[in-house]
Length: 392
Image 1 (cartoon, helix red, strand yellow):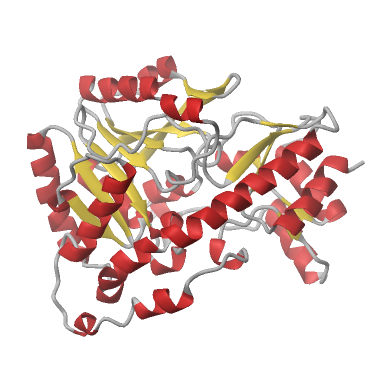
Image 2 (cartoon, one colour; image 1 turned 30 degrees about the vertical axis):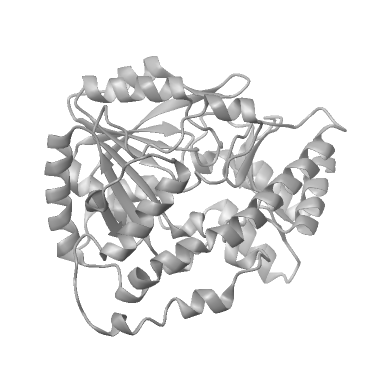
């Protein structure tokens, strides 16, 4: 009765069972995996957010496939602040109900069933499901770590086949925090142009940059406006304004004019078919985007405090280390690989009441990695890290 594309293994795995049993026991659990900013103790401007949802114009149905012009103009203004002097036409913006829908639009735009999209690993696990339900095959090429993360370009080139339609990168990567460098960006764009591939760039964590000014000069900024290859940039309120519940995102399109024009015409038909982003959120988008000025400093402060705590604790021992992180909300720990990452994560739940993600959740190629969130409240983070590092 059901399609093969949804024939996932839905049985509870050992890790999920350990989490469920621990919570059912009534014991407290120090959660070092929290990624929902709305439950992390940040201070939101509640009055401004709620007021933004009261526009009376939203009571009238006036569908616009690409999204309301006022909302798209707010997206354009966001990028102008990110990259002064940058040029973005609101007509090259498509609004979506978050980046997941944006990926769905792009998979439909670019791929026939069985076509391939290249993606760097480690990577966000949701991509596998989004690709599967659109009959798209994800083909991995590795990020490698050598005093910092970098692309394995020979492996990327080798992964390209006659069915490849796009290269997907996350900037900065989730969960490694790797920002694509200017040199890497040049080469990725050149490869995309050489092989007639689209470039899909997920920038949801772009605003959460860490590190020193010298590092900043080496990093590529927003890909919005990239002209060498057909480039789709994805982002939205979920991370920029820490408002995942508002479900608003977008796609910007840049590159050679002929390709951009064709892509926008086709995307407009796809968007017109769904008309999924609701009117209240579209009218509210300028005000909701403005909330980034209130929330981002709080999140960046939390990340830096937790990183400092983590590094201070790690400095007192030698068994566990932290890999370099340049941005985003996560940190990757390298741990002794005497057991699988999942077995270690389960032991931490059962013996230390600490919740972390095993590296295989993000397609790390080998055991020996744990992923933790830097959004966790400072007190809980300190306790959880102490238990993780000092465990016997």
